[in-house]
Image 1 (tube, rainbow, N blue to C red):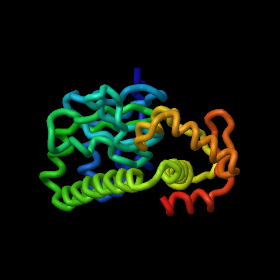
Image 2 (image 1 turned 90 degrees about the vertical axis):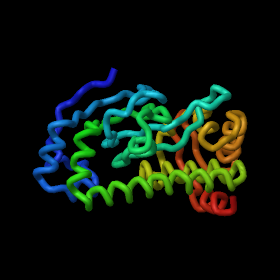
Image 3 (image 1 turned 60 degrees about the horizontal axis):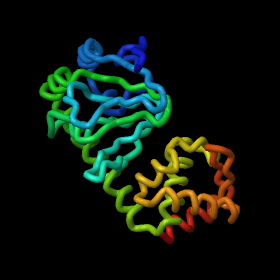
Length: 231
């Protein structure tokens, strides 16, 4: 079960996004009355597909995966969200129910803001409303761009791109603990688990990466980048 934690107010929170920084103090104080932060452990479910949308979700720490269960009953990962991402944007203004599920792939802290209070601020602050729309558009663009990048590459290119994403965009370190299982990686990049294991083994043998349990070190980043670019 997630743990509710005591946090700073919205106006003093060091994790608030650029969007929220543009709100007046009175608006932040108002939203502060209707928000709560929860701490989740790796593997805990945040949102189940089909659940009613009641809150606006903001990821402060950790990593989560957004996924949808297909007619094949398999989980198809839509995207990986990192700190400072809004993780409820894809359905929040278009549907009454979530069209996907959210699960933590690392210990995470998520801020929940009551949806009605957020909509009240949007109605009163046009600039904030435009910023929200811009963020929603960028989020969708990023997801579409990532999916196209992955699907347009061969198997080695897809694995290279994913490893570089974690190194450059998530951990900012060439050595990191891989947050996804081999099966989850396969679901994200539309490969079989066997192919994921095979290509990671090939990368290791070719000296591109070093594997120690779930820890990956990129030992030849330039070649990985070349493989990713060539596709």
